[in-house]
Length: 114
Length: 113
Image (cartoon, rainbow over all chains, first blue to last red; front, side, top):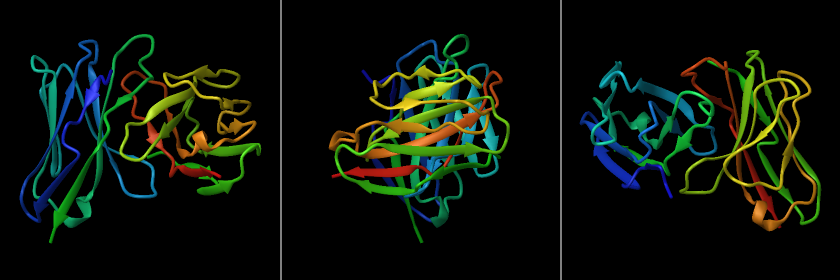
């Protein structure tokens, strides 16, 4: 049973517009969430993270929002650029024993059109 | 940012062959990980290590084995490759602190014929 779900497999947006990538989780023990970006034939690259004590974290064009009651997080990219075209993975972990284990979603392919 | 290397990047091999996928990191990270990923699917943790002489199995059962004799090196071995082992194998490392970020290598794409 998937604990981290990225229900939309793909998203296409125009350059300069906002991209919103969504992620849902089922395990209430998760308290740390990360987004990774992956280009073809490369490994995932860390993008941004958020702890459960926060509801928002911002880094340049990237903002992650966390809604703990809904077990939902989203990544906003503003403005979107063609170089953002990649597969984005949501991941989650919990503190304590086993905290080294990241649970990943299946990823969402973002295409930013010029 | 971590420097983590994997070789080979691509490998095509016949059934029954023994293979070793190499992973090295230069950041002195204590924790290292191996993930397996099929196209369109999530990454699954197959092995991890807390440090030298420490290895643990991940959430996804795998016929592969790992060793951690040196901090910087975490090779993965398949004694007898089979077509079902065809996948992408990703190595990662982290500092071992709470809330640490895992940094990934470029991956090895394995095709077993």
